[in-house]
Image (tube, rainbow, N blue to C red; front, side, top):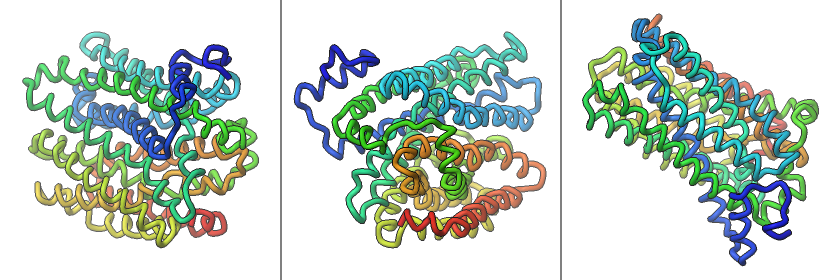
Length: 442
């Protein structure tokens, strides 16, 4: 099919396809790079919003509330994106089936970038009152719908092409986007806070990262389209490994795998927010520490997370992904018993909490994505993996910052540890109850 006559394609998709029509092949390393770029852009969006939820929105949108209550409301709006993701999956699966994955990905990423850029123009409570919170909620739900639609199947393409005995290594590659996105977002906010007077930062400085997020999404769009129009992707689509199936048909046929896949990574997804968003809110609200210092700690700890994610790939290929998920869930359960004491033990304790937490998180999170994707029938693998990911993030991470902060403020940091323990127990129970399914991930 020529570039000019391909139906249902966007201009960006035709430009990407032209690279292959001119004889440019696609190496496996390019798939990995495209996956990392795509996930990094998504997580940069994610962390830009998360950091602003602590440092900006309570003062901009909820200045009439006390700082704790304003932050809790900010986290409630934060959770809306996770509730909206499954809606995005439903909408964009239909777009994918009718107009093609290029059109779907283009619309989804521009919706994501547009929603993110719109937040940069958000007027505060002083200007439009409660309308500020309503607009923020609307834009946040736009981000969530777009994230549901941005599922491109590239992680599945990596898994399909994984050599025998290397499934764990290929599974960890998409997960590198999370710490990379956190590092960039943390350093950018750290620079703006340090360089600007406090009032200037609150007036206009915080808006710049949201503009940057839009620009990064444009770059990520072409990087991902570069792959989804390749012959390799076309073959996966033709073999139904990457074909979008109707969502309700998928749920009806594969509900057991979806439930298992949604709860198996519960521990790592709960820990994800417990070492990223929650500690920033705790330090900012209940200590005298500068956010600049803690953002630097987060960026450094995320480097340890990158190393741990890479190590998870090697370890999983030796002992099996199911075994590693179970072992890290047990480690998270143990961590929950003393982590609160570290977070409340001053600057040294905070650093120890973050670094140790990111090491455990990297080992767990590195293998948490698509843990049971190979259990899906090939016809349902693409849609089933997307919907399972939506549910895993909703149950494991969506409300974690709000619940952990509320529990800590009401009952002390030990209560946040108990919340994290519940996630670890959920993962262990899910793996135990689904042993037959879980064997397929080894």
